[in-house]
Length: 198
Image (cartoon, rainbow, N blue to C red):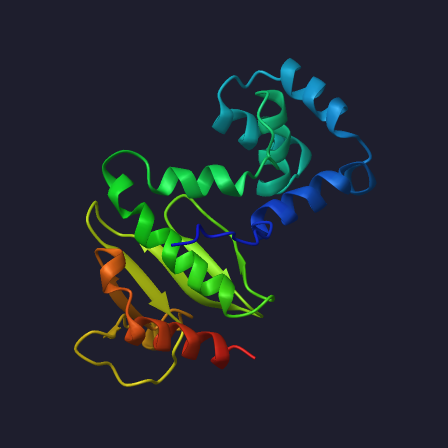
């Protein structure tokens, strides 16, 4: 079985932070380095205190304050490593799920060149124009393949997540415990979700 070769896309939160930092001087009159120096001199010492101080004393928003405090703490607020997130999903007790996760990723990427993955800490959204599916190691023994299938009727295997009623994109899920369970039915539903997102 071929190893998946995902096409990663930046996480939307990363793109937003990049824009905030890129426009910091224009929007506040000070570059990031100057803000960091100011926070170092402030009476606040914890992360939350520093963020509250930036918001109260300087009228900064939550995201701007987070970017400044992260830089002060030598963290890169825009350091998004998708492969690291993907590997983290299958660390420890969930390692046995990796082959099934890789196969689902491979199948998703094979649907078309417009499919991208944006791994997060708990799942992998798969996008075309929007999120059409997600791969989520839900327990140590089960992956939930979430699918955006709208009003599609649930079946014994294709479970309704309640997402449609809540306004979520992911409306259905299929439980998968091994590569052997990734059969023609799973492929058909994954393709249907992809084709619905045109």
